[in-house]
Image 1 (tube, one colour):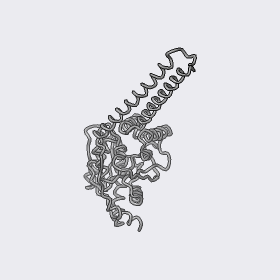
Image 2: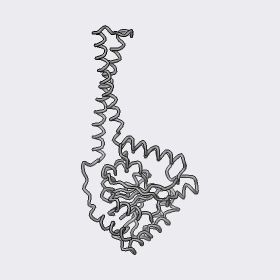
Image 3: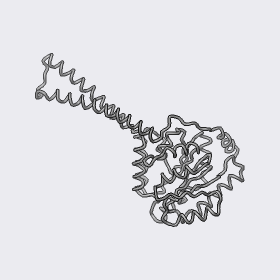
Length: 326
């Protein structure tokens, strides 16, 4: 398996993180696990605090560390995607630079993936390790994303995740600069699990600052919504169709009123004008939604959403047997 870590301001944490990753490597080897940590990919995302120099020293000291250097800062998700495309493991774990994601917990994610027959497992925090404002924004954003996309698994999205390697690389290859990685992952699998893990954001606890501010979170939210097939379009189409039906019913009622002489005292012309606007407004809304749905379908195709994707899960039995005996 491989790990991928985007690095922007992690100089003070990187040595400790590598030491923890080395512990995981040793644990897998000594327990004769049917899986090993073959590489850890660190992506220098235009780091501003000397992280690049620290990574060079660590790579020189450890043959299993790979450093990918980006030309400038692109952000957490693009850096993660770049790392995934450079990782060759059967499973890929994505972890943050600041030790709030303990690499030792990767084994727990592997267990959940094997026993639950999942392709993707998110580690969800058992408590709150950020400010209340950020926690509220993050939870609200996830609920909105689920409402727009209809994909319940997106409520579990976290940057600490374990993904089957083939699926991770397939999704990463489909990502462009406006695609949200976790939405792309949902194109490739619906076998998604989660497990609660205790997380501690030392950077936030020590300085009150998070590694990613609200501007970055808003950028993630925008890309996620753009990447999702908006379910709200179908609601708009439904409203349009209801408007057409209501207009037709009112028209029938008006004709019956004229024939029977049961005409209201409303100013002449207003009922017919209202029904006409309601009818053609509904027709136009429905047609517009049809065109937008087609546009979304074309856009998702151009973004790389696959019609199918083969995956080999035969080796998962080895992991299940290993965890069953441990």
